[in-house]
Image (tube, rainbow, N blue to C red; front, side, top):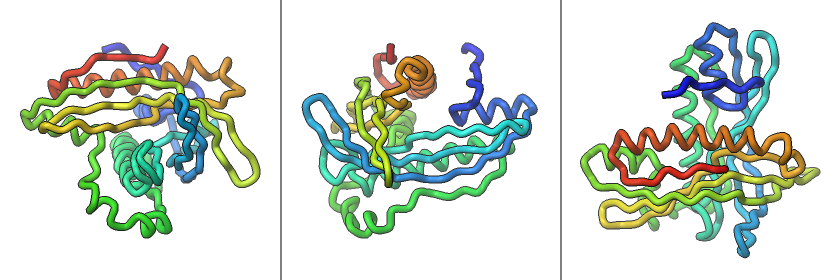
Length: 234
């Protein structure tokens, strides 16, 4: 396996974990944003909510700041439901907290909350069944079940809405079609994003980050004997 190259300044959990393990003094704290975003998906514009965690702190006294998208949720059927997305986001967030903790990085472990929407969509999970993330399907495969994954990659333009301004963004999305236990499920993840106005400066870096995340995921697929074809952004 190739040696991981850390970004400078750090822009991934892997970066700050690796820098800590190499002996750097690392501090880390989080803040959360749940933003309404207008997506232009092919010819089907729709609004969704994205669940963002902003990581900031210092590496050997030098400040850093980056954000990670943990889920996208919709109040309709064009992407995972909002009540599913907040729980999926927290599951992946807790995985990252565990990585940071294992590396010896101490921090306050807060989670996404969406009280108003959680109440509004109460009962959705009972009606539509349990919430499965990609690692649930990996575990199903490890138990000896046949699992097949078909993945499609897309650059999806979108507009993030803040209180007093808007951001034109490009999201690097992967849409999984997962067949297991005689059923087919769809599951999506955002692997990276960048401002449209900074496409020349940031596109290549974000493609590399997305492809590094895909590489790690495909390694887990291989270990679990999941049938899949490796596709990457270019």
